[in-house]
Length: 472
Ligand SMILES: [Zn+2]
Image 1 (cartoon, protein in one colour):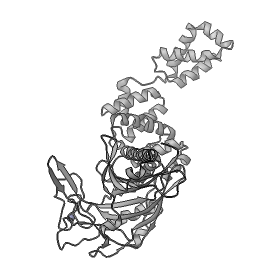
Image 2 (cartoon, protein in one colour; image 1 turned 120 degrees about the vertical axis):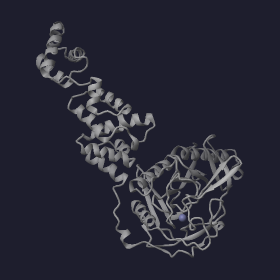
Image 3 (cartoon, protein in one colour; image 1 turned 45 degrees about the vertical axis):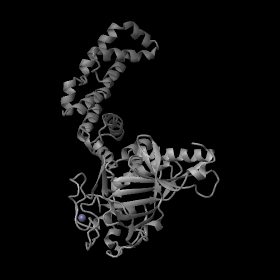
């Protein structure tokens, strides 16, 4: 990317709230059911049906507002956003336009930079169009699922900042437990507003919106493609013609963005107050609601309490399931650095390679902790522990049974080790003489010989200890 240009990015994220029922009716919000069974006159938009506000959705929006240090409006309003699309049965979407429930929040990046959150508002999701060959079908199971739309300030200056912001937002939502935030299923999806301006120019460049991005990798690719496109247009003096205000779609196969339609302005939606809903009043008890420890705080605590490095603490707190796993290991008596090593490096490495999420790990916190404990007790070596872990990834077996099966039990019997040490020293009397005359580097040689004699099973600490005594 050329250093003569500045990138400006703002993001809109749609988060599906994990309430049991839809936002304005009692239909279930479950994913993957038979098409159109989770519907009623309200979410089908039949005449005369009246929406009723789901209190759980309000509570979850308030929790989010607290988590990002935002202002929570006691009173907010619902408006109708009018547009026509086959998956929108009413011909309008009930959304919050004039006064959103949440305003003026922030997300703090690792380098301390604050990314402003302009607003977060409640609205209903649309259904889904399904295209099969020449036939298009509409599934309205999703219509009326509660959404929290989180709109950032145009504060991000690179795709890396955008991804960091999104990952932090994703983690916060999961820590709060207000959404499963499953990107593949569309419960956490992002629209990116991207513009580029020559360095030093005050006015923003022309803004392009890239719609419906549902993986961090695609978001990064789409933003970078778009930035390059804008810079090239500047360089070839074609900016006015090539970069117009519009909505674009990212084609995951070609890695390019393509024009979808001209961007609507809010005037195009002819917003007007929703006459069937009273203004939303947040119940007083919601203002005092407690929220769980959030990733940034947790990371800071891990660094202070467990003396973990910033990078390690960041990895362990990136997902609540991972932090939970780590904390269980600590509870079971594993020392923090050992827990970090066994979890973040050994287990996560194996899970990533196998494409398994930590949630579905075949190795439980109990089992991983026992490997770390057996290592600490010197029943097995570190290398032995890794072999046990490999086996646990493959089959349902207890840790001690795996140690037995793999024959990894270390020899810690001092008498047996002493005998091996004596034999090694006797066989190498010349080297013992050299050692005693000052060639201390030979110590490692003796350790190696004893380990070899024990077929790698002698406890190295005990070997060291006995060798030191004998060579004094
Ligand atoms: Zn319904």
